[in-house]
Image (cartoon, rainbow, N blue to C red; front, side, top):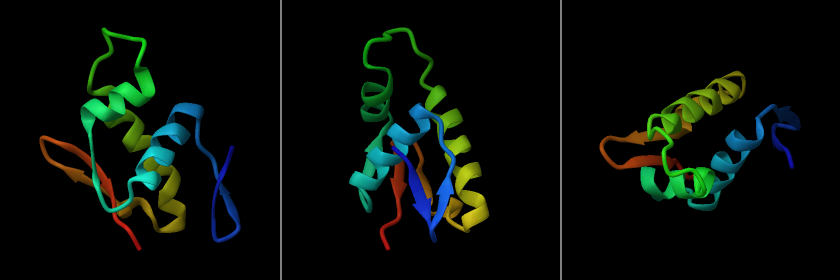
Length: 85
């Protein structure tokens, strides 16, 4: 599995890739923090919800060289959304 932008590979860790794929699949819609936690850490009941923020930050950093980091929007108190388009 790999992501590309403009023919160049975007380097993502496995968890980052799964979250990015989830946001891509739901582009234009807000993905709740609970949905993200279930998708990435379904078997870990004691995971800190702030882990989502860390993974989002890493994805944004990976997207920054492609000018795409601002496409991931924070929906305060709810989750994240990948701007479609």
